[in-house]
Amino acid sequence: MKAIGLMSGTSLDGVDVALIDTDGEAVAAFGPASTYPYSAQDRALFVAALEGARALTDRDARPGVLADAEALLTTRHAQALAAFLAAHPQHRDVAAIGFHGQTVLHRPEIGLTVQIGDGPALARAVRAMTVAPGPALVYDLRAADVAAGGQGAPLVPVYHRALARGLAEKGPLLVLNLGGVANITYLDGDADPIACDTGPANALIDDFMQARTGEPLDRDGAMAAAGTADEAALARLLDHPFFGQRPPKSLDRNAFRAWVAERGGVEAMKTADGAATLTALSAACVAAVLPHLPRRPELLIAAGGGAHNPTLLRMLGGRLGLRVLTAEAVGWSTDALEAQAFAFLAVRALRGLPLSFPTTTGVGIPLSGGRVIASA
Image 1 (cartoon, rainbow, N blue to C red):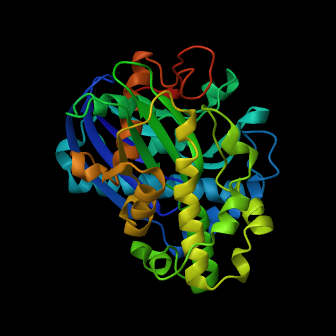
Image 2: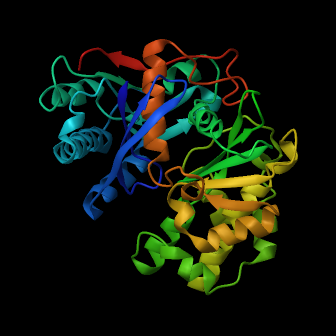
């Protein structure tokens, strides 16, 4: 069936929209994909929501700025979907939509994960732009896993497994998503995927660049390429207990912000050296997971915004000692992969198939999830 995924990641750069044809087990065809960037004002509100969410104890509460952010986020997703379907009217007969929302707090250790995004409001908007009876809308895909004792993240590994079955490479491999937070999927034949967050990817770099230069990111890794990573600072930062934990494990976007501020000394560095040190940290965090895997991978496939950063890719290859390819190089989409994954997960949810596994989130048994609004 045709399914659309809507993804707003931890980098807060915009809404990714992607269409695939899938039965939730294999991908029959890739459809179009587009990104609809947030404005600077949008991003500022979402950053404020991240700050406001830090005190939440109720996943359904929307105090203060969180209510405004949820309303705006839902509007931007409806606008992105409308623009996508206007550009591709032949896909108005889509059967399912997966709506990730925006994670503003992720603390699975206390059973709490919060994704803002008003599913019923988006479903009402969808009815006006699709062919009757309209698609099923699947949202809030992490909550069931966390309620059952899982980490709630990452959810994309089951999609990585479906994609990897079409590769010529059959040895163990890593799929690395470089969003605000980095996460890996370890795949080896027909075994269940092993997955975890590895640490910060773009979030710390983006925040540093915004504060130092007013730019939202280190475009093409140019600033980091001009600097030198502080290896002593990296050693201090890698002395975090998270890196000694075995998968599965997951992180909030801001989990390492205070740690880096206290131990990294980045604020005292020149801008280029600070960018180089934070970029090297992102690579070193991925390298730290290798000892926890059953076998050494032979290949790393990088996707997400960080896959456009050649400095980060070069550091990954050097610190991991692996061959590094981008998703595009193996016929996948570097930018649309996570949006595609939430289309895939929506179909799996409709079929009652597992979204998460003991080896990916730590949940006790393979588990489906998501809230469904039928015939949205």
